[in-house]
Length: 336
Length: 252
Image (tube, rainbow over the protein chains, first blue to last red):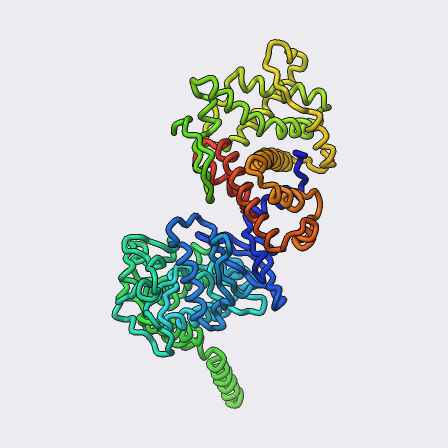
């Protein structure tokens, strides 16, 4: 019997690609995505009867470095309990040596796809503020994301904003489990060799650039791993803000208001000393922009200040103007 | 890359073999060339025959002649030497050559009688015809060129996997591993929906974990052999990586 039926063919292709989870509580259901080092599947947790997403290492991993990185990603996620960060449920190694972790299955759209349906700038900026919340929280736990970009942000079916893919995350402190903010402003980074008891394979060596061009900071692109701090993620957030603020239809040509452009420019300044020092400072400026208040990134001239004042109090100004006009007209009418 | 570096040992994700039919058909060693052509024809004759049959709505007899003629022309005109790996995949090149050959033959119908002094390959066309009927494909349901390309690609995968299954059976027979082979045939090669692991365990008086482990081993072995087959049909590592993704990468 040489002929393979279509069903057998499909099974053989799946069997090749799909790891064997039959000895676990999970049943793989669907291929979801392929990343740099792993594949993400939709799976069913048989015990809790719920859908989950499983990320599993699929690349050749001769020295175990990638497995360590995937494990580190799971540990990072486990440390980050926040509504804006996808929670990890489980992690393990299959009998064939494949390392995996299980996370919440998020139904929704990637930010770049979702933005097409959001016309209002204010709504877009509010999305950005929620991303800032998650990143700021991670920083407070001593973790840098290092790969913030539109495709790593998911908008859930109920409007939840989730920062995904922490595969390149960098741990700033060896044991940042407390709520206190780690001392990262010094720029001193402890590699994951300080956090992992056995090996430092999850750490990025100096001279090796990892990230996404267009969104990664110059120091990250230069592979200066030891130089990275919060401001590297702030650079990516600046680029992300620019992406979010511009309507999808004319990403390149649309002009932002000078204040908003100044916020983007300050966040994504080439010289990191000119960037915001904290994500919270960036978020504060965006909030102030949303409220029509002056922003720290931009010094206004009198005309801009007047214009902003007018936009902020437009309704009141119009009402007063109307009142004054009516009163003038009434006075003129009374004199006749 | 030396064509002599053929080595079927090993495992893991990527087969160590660097032997490639594309390099070997250009070899000065006639035995090497013959072996390469054997591998190439074994992988492609069925996809080519079925493709010609469906795309050009040609009767079996004529499709047999055209398939024979196409492979004869491939040899006579040394068409493989013109294949440029940097520009396309080998299977795309072969499909395009087949297209061109058949169109030319139709245009100049009767210009040349095939089967005389040309190479004649011993191919089991009745089996291929039987497979086409088993698939119950309606040519009208695949009217576009893209669909025919997909069809050709799928048949190529079927042919490649069938070769890997044959090798897997031989390998199991020589190693005396009958149990994994039986389970693999019953589950992975099942024509329709396969039995559950528990049913297999009961039928073969094994524990479910034994079934799981034996099937996992069988799939790993099958995977290794399929990748060896694939590697031999690719001319570069890049092409192999690309084809490997197409073949096994699901939606990639």
